Length: 250
Image 1: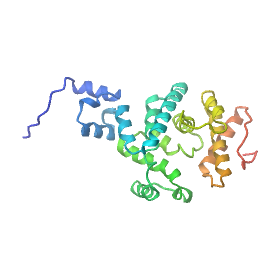
Image 2 (image 1 turned 30 degrees about the horizontal axis):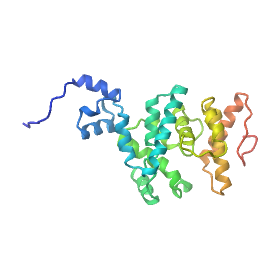
Image 3 (image 1 turned 120 degrees about the vertical axis):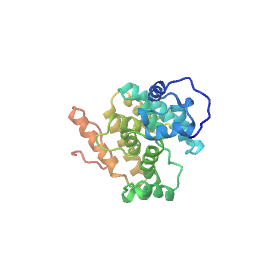
Image 4 (image 1 turned 180 degrees about the vertical axis):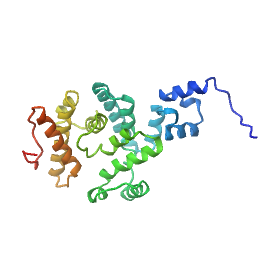
């Protein structure tokens, strides 16, 4: 027999389980217990967002916190505009850069730990690796749903046929309020609230053109994503521009 001491809490287990599903109740549980419930998503629990921010921000360099806050702000607004779950959008945004501060070797160690498959270009680029390692680490630490983890995984390169949450995460990272006024940003910000397909075509076009202007290799996922949204717009009777190097007939 073990005697456990503790202050009584004026809430029933049923009430607490209901609160956990509403992103409430963190203050009613010991920190380790709450963290384990969230990690395993017991009882259908969803993380209290202030709790999640505090833990995710601890992995960031201080100067990146403002960017992540901006991405969350934009992601929630886009989710409300396009009928996605603002809480899931916030989770993806808060966690999207969780491994950004890690150096190349640490990124590769996480790839080994989580059995992450990478291509040659990804293994040479921390910028590309952090999306995959961030998705895996955030899922491990905070029990992210598959859809949310996938949104983090493709927030840098994009991919064809992205879900609404994936597009929101990709675009929020691109247009968050702290971004400097680079060419096309004002137009992209407006289009994001008018037509998500047009926004993805424009964003990937801008990304491909920027990468190629610096003589950097462009990841195939981004090229395939751009082509997919070109064709999606064409099927709707819209004839968009295309990135440099992308043929007219794709």
